[in-house]
Image 1 (cartoon, helix red, strand yellow):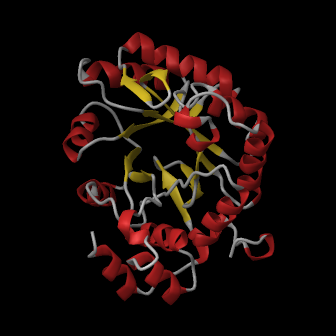
Image 2: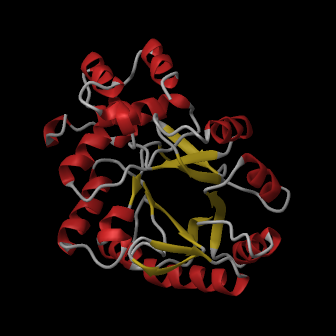
Image 3: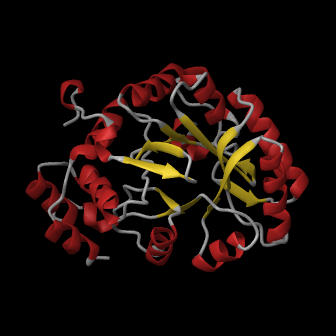
Length: 289
């Protein structure tokens, strides 16, 4: 299912409305892997990274997720070079991390820093408004009201349209919603990584878009004799496609953002939009983790 002639457009996954306003196809693209090792520095092949972004849009992907910390800055710069002026494509980005080097991440939620993050992302992306801006991590050293307060100010100024959270619990989402409107939550989540089941269920009940990152992470389930391989054989897809199809059927508020620097893997992932798993298989996979 990875050849160009057999790729089904991302629109086959249906659509979702983020924040009651931003309607996108339910299979997006996460742009973290377009940077160098450790999410640090430029990719080995810049033109190949640009080709992946453009191919994603050709395949109907109209939601691209990134962050200022990816590179840092590199991912946003690549997205602008590849896709500006973004006709019909929603770009979501994040801020609230500082980087010390490859695989080094430190939350920083001071209001002045978050304002700087937004201003620089706007410049790099070539936008006047960021459609969805997500607090990359809650900084425990800064009151949440201050972190979200500056994002609310930036929304009032027209620099942010909708605000999201990342790596949060249900309690943190509820606390944030007592302060401002929250359009989305982005947590690590997959068929084998289910610690945020309660967050998915909360988002579904409240109409909040849930954006799973690392959506194909499958652990032992991906072994040649594992459950995903068996499900792939039964459904006619690949293990990665089954993992994505399970997410799409987990809840209508789920918007997976598989990331890759490979055109072949991109096409494989997008083709998952057309894979419909039998309900019994969805239940079986749900009970494994």
